[in-house]
Length: 592
Picture 1 (cartoon, rainbow, N blue to C red):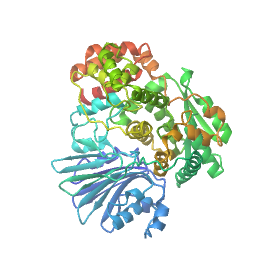
Picture 2 (picture 1 turned 120 degrees about the vertical axis):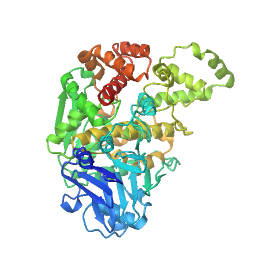
Picture 3 (picture 1 turned 135 degrees about the horizontal axis):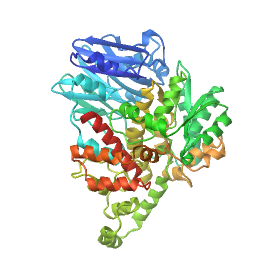
Picture 4 (picture 1 turned 30 degrees about the horizontal axis):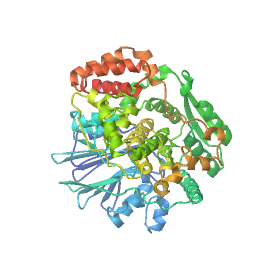
């Protein structure tokens, strides 16, 4: 796991911009100039610890800077009959490029963002993994091309802070983060997950290399369970490829408990597990459940317990690590936990992200399936009648919003992480910046799973995990997001996946490996008493900050901001306030 940086021109600020990436790769730092172009790399050594694997790596007029891990690199050497001079997964990418040009990305099993520079053609070939685990940002204007793992490194090279991107604010308020190619800065873009792009010195062309196929091949439950279990074992085993110790995050939920149990079973050793909980507001704390799994698998367990002061003391560092507003308050406890793991000498851990989206883990899914069923029962006459009275209904609840969407024939399910709805955004913004949304798939199960894999997981959760873990020089690997398992899950008949409980199929498999106490417990997200703590600490200065920033931006309606603040004191609209608070703290620091 590493940090990458490059430009197609000479920059006096290049070295300083590269140093900004040192937390992503503290083991080695190097930059080179090739024909006027500059390339830099900071390395966190996990596979092939020798100097031969350092980057930028050059073979036969092909240069690469690569961030990530390719888990099947040894198999690719054999299958593709590649002749490699190092024991590094980085060289394998170069050799595949030499053999196939751009047409090899679907052979890679791993997480990656990289740039290959072809010295003869003077072209840049850049790519990002299927689900967005690794970041890739770029700037292209007036023939200046800059790319990096970090937005701040691009800004350092530019030497000036770009103006704000209003579309990103609209997306953030609705979905926790900017979406697709947007960042909060104009002209700094994100390369979307599962895309590659080629810059030939004049123009950029982008192409998608991976799409999820929803054709249902598997219609038998026993066949589905056997296939899932086999793929889970393969996925966990492949993510243990490392020349350093691999730990495991253990929240106390079914996902991380199962991953940790499989890791323990595969290696037949005592593994290191880590969890976080809270000294106050114990209803948010899951340490007792993590302890149950830890005892069951006999792991070397490290629980970390935090209070309000820890949360507040790590708030600024977390916002800085995320580089742009991110609405997930769980980033702060994750920052504290990964800092602790790094201090114990662990460089990489397994984690359970992806399970909820693939196995229908969120309670919301069952509720929305009922909405979809209700939608089918409505005759045109009934729909017309409801349309005539909908405006009179209370419209500040989620339920009334979903009913309105059905009646107005709008997309019913947008994302698990939806915060401000369209109606709420109209109240919030003086003028709502608009953007296009995906067209829903016909099968609601496929649609909810797909859009959450893309937005909630791909844009929000994975960006949080990457920025925060790499802030502390820790690599996080996600076995549920092995593309073979993802593809397999979308090939299973939706009725089998739904079953009679959330995570129906996964629970059947997990019952072999973890205690029933964990399987049958009520689901909790990775949450914290963030709302309680910020009100206790900052009191009315929260609203004062939001209003002061809004006086400068004039984006929002003050009265609605005040209303949200008052509701949050009653533990309502908590996420709405947090998103506004984080945005205001970031804007205040960057622009005021």
